[in-house]
View 1 (tube, rainbow, N blue to C red):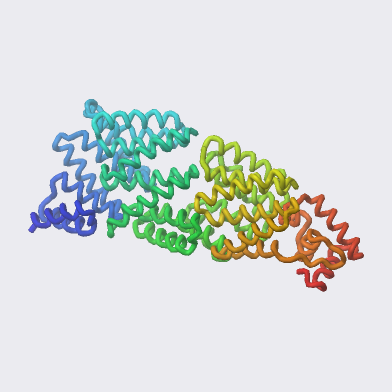
View 2: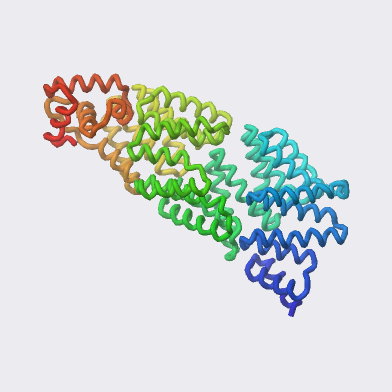
Length: 542
């Protein structure tokens, strides 16, 4: 019976039928302890089912079996894998113990290039944790060369993927992406073991998203999804895969599907006891709910993400802006930026800083944040980040009463977002294009752009954005000889807005707001904001 279980377990493993493979191999192991090669199959099956601790336990047995057989290179490999899994889960003590155990075997594997390559990986992570990215990249390159020398596919892909990460952290974005692409080719070609394949897939996609490589992230996420779909019992990697899918779906405007994937990801992280990643899935859900205008739901989700150890910025600051708490939003995003030294993190926060600064009427702060974002973008060569810069530059240009320079930047942003199949971002850009055209006197073009933006927001379910675009399209009602702009200002005065808030919402200076108010008071023959607001209500301007 044990022999039958063993054969069926091996067959199921080859088919990536992880549940059946695990059950049959475990049954064979209970009947008679497995040989070390089959023991590693059992451990891998456990890992793919999300049972990390069982994997480490089985791999420990494999480590000792390799030692007894004098296979010190494989013993080192098993020890390093145990260390990497435990450290990734935050279990630094046990993980460090396995690193020490592997290193003590160093003098026995001096002629084993594969083992020496594995022994270098903990050193890479140590340099990385210390912020020594150049040193980390040099060690990763050495590990890559060792793996290439002996044709060890897993070692080559893992070292190449790690080298790509370190290049990116050191600011060499294009070199990093090239290394990541090469590692991913090995994964998509089926050259790697199951665990190495999943690690490379998820790590490369995450790195692509961090450097705003939307096209690469989309392509690799589709490949990861196909790989995962061929393994019905797969639990490992699927949580992260679902988050990646949610991010792509959100970008592409499929917001309900993005919510479903984020919720599914949360369940998978819980199922695999990967508590450190639950907040990531919750944050993604919060982002979509905020865009849909479900602000109370988003508030609770951002709080939950924070409780799970995930930084809820910049989403939480943008939520405060959507709630009308402009000063809170401004202080929150400034604090987040003050803490962010990593360029990748700052690139995520700066677009929100531009938006919030403009809403608070601080055009100088918005211009400074835009300049910082533009400087960061130079090293990325990312079309997505370029679109973000163009949009920010256009928004700031409008606030500085310079629609002539704002318009081409906003059109460029809309074109790039269209190419990236990002309908929400296209609509936001076209809304500002409409405002720029109106400021330049082209009313027909302004109406067409604002109508297109409003229709896109409606299709997406972006209710707050739809209402704003609709208000900007409303035909002007002009009693008492008021101009269209004066009516806009009066409506906001009646809504209780300060001059600074009016400045931000209409994208004009506070000085211009004050001048409009003087004209309004004169035309209405009133001397206070309260009296002007009463006029607005009496004439149904609000």
